[in-house]
Image 1 (cartoon, rainbow, N blue to C red):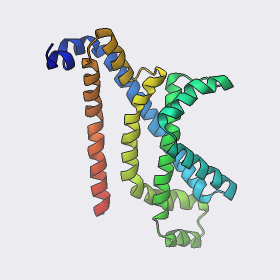
Image 2 (cartoon, rainbow, N blue to C red; image 1 turned 90 degrees about the horizontal axis):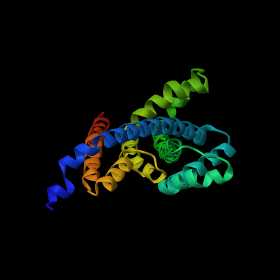
Image 3 (cartoon, one colour; image 1 turned 180 degrees about the vertical axis):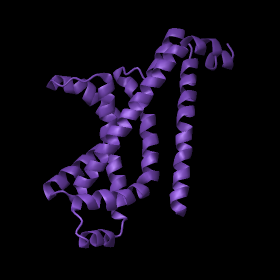
Length: 221
């Protein structure tokens, strides 16, 4: 059997294309849910770490440190396989979103903390001198500038977590990698895995270029 017949077999890829197509949509749904939940939770955790009462700040620090340190695969296995023994059972999709979002929110919190702390304190003091309430200062003064600073690293983290959605196949989540693995077993040919790799490349390469563009744009402005 030639290299093309083994790894780039068009007939095999066309036969399993419906499976891969379903996997693409599941992967995009998983990535979208993770990025949304993780970003919101991360910003909230960042604000708690910086501005809440000391006990809550310590809890936020513990949350961020733990979920930045723990591997996603370990967390995913714990959520899907261990929590049912405690009476908590989640579907593969919810388990994957929860595991990925916890890790992503921890990194997001650190990115936005760095963005907020890069803002000169004089701006906050000026807003306070104008009598603006703390909530308005955060929403109108702090966060818009922090977003601008944090966009490049946050986008980079988003691309990384989007790639890590492939780990969801461990809990039988029918994402692109799981579908490709099943297709490989059905056809006894690795071509579906190569096709899945190419699909990941097509989807994520523009995002990688977006990261470079944002880094250059906000470095010069």
